[in-house]
Amino acid sequence: MIANVNEPDPNSKTENVLDLMIKRGEKSVLSFAFGLEMWDDFKQYITNGIDPNTPQKYKDIINGKHYEKDGKKCYWNGLIQEDTKESLLADYVYCEYHNDNVTQTVGVGEVAIDNKVGDRTSMIPKITKVWNRFITKLHDGVRSFPAGYTIEGNPYWIIKGCRDYYGIYPKHGEVSLMQFLFDNKDKYPLFDQNYRRFGEFRNEFGI
Image (cartoon, rainbow, N blue to C red; front, side, top):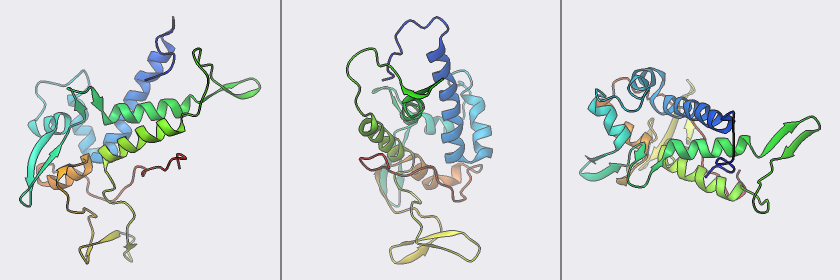
């Protein structure tokens, strides 16, 4: 929930800020997950809603998919869960919006924004909870904390006693977006499999 979003706003400032954050969030999160080449190909199908001509492989990313990996049943819930009205992108935008709007710049410096209703309290625990939910949906620790790096600077992990250059721990049941993409990488030839990070889980202090 975005505070004060339903208050009179004749210039639609809050709505415009949120629209911009949603667009930035889509690009930041999905270009990280896909790589720039796949993101450039994917985004044409979501410019004005979901294009009816969207390839099935991209519909699987948007709506979710059940599949098997090494004989184990797995499922990716999708970018959008219609039944619960949830989205990993919505979680990301929520965190970014509140992080940017904890204070406001005025002539005398940074001041707390007026909540209009209720007493002010720390939003860190709530933002941290939503952020960790976002990270779980995005990568859930996939490729986190490499065991070391090669001479060329490439990361590696130790999985089942062996050196692994993907950092994908065997997992079944509900999986993250990154796990889904790596499990099905043969269907996504534009998917960039190079190592990159987009944040980690945070503790109760938001660190």
